Image 1 (spheres, rainbow, N blue to C red):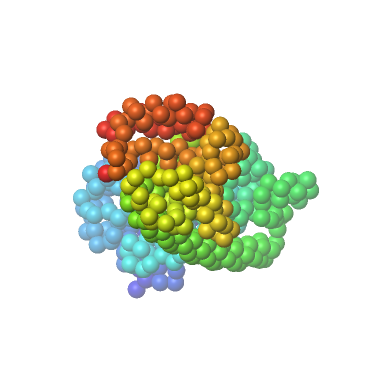
Image 2 (spheres, rainbow, N blue to C red):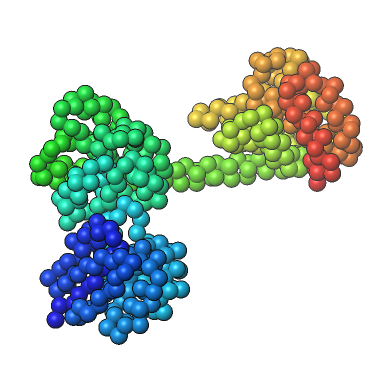
Length: 466
Ligand SMILES: [Fe+2]
């Protein structure tokens, strides 16, 4: 025996005609009833399997309780076309379990039958291509729906405004958009659509009137993927839509492939960067170990330099490069003998002259790292002075590269904030005084100011050798 479905609507029949045409199959008979306040539901259909109720019926007092008490209908499942709130309302009126589907407007046959299949038959909804058709002419909407719905999920909107509210919470793969609509026309609609998240590149096909030749150029320049002139042959619409969807699938798979490769490259780049930092950190540890007075000096200078750079407005990438340049600033000490570096007594002029070669040696060591020239800059010029009295080149003011001026301040700070064989680390006030005095002489004023600000904020005096 055929199963039957009873569609019970309230006054307006349009929606139920849509549902009916979507549900009718060889083995299912669909009957509709339109009720008003006075009528009662006739549920004497043979093999009644499902009763679909319009939410408007909830407003008719006494109608639904009667249905739930009825012996025949109580074997059938009840399905309410409405929202969560409607369902809650229904559960207060009907003493049986009601299954509800939230049908977004514009209503769509596929979404209704999908929901019914999912709830009642337990079948999975296929992940079909979703197409939104926007046209103020309802005949045109349904004509297009009939042409395309066997192959795709079709959603209908009779204005730009309702399309936008639908698109706010629904994914679509293709949009067919009428140009001439009252209030918001096609061009205005597409402008709003493009501003919505994830719809920046969803293909939009304009539907234009035959006599509107100018509109076609306008459609394409407004970002339309194509246009179709009305009236059109059914096959033309079906073929155009199929082509665009195929193209879109190709584009998506291509772009996901590009994304995948980009992610791989980014990941590799990150690993290499981490490796570089690790190697440089190891190297700077080795430099510091050579000089027994400078325990952890390079790492602290790197941190202070990076912080100065951050406060000065460097990007994260630039800060990273300052950090590495800071780690390497004393790399030239590799070329200075341990005996001189670790000499507890005062250095002779000759020995001091040897120490002063470490920036040049450092620059020489790092000159082969051509892809990242910043690394050598810190090592080469961190002992230059703003007044031109530094070494090795006696550069003055902004002749000294910015990174070297930053590291110069951080280096001098850490030297004062570190313990020497003959003294402990200096008190904060003393260091502050030295930096104020050296501002514009030894130190680049802007970086001296940032360092002073950092000292000011370091109320517990954490920034010293531990
Ligand atoms: Fe140095």
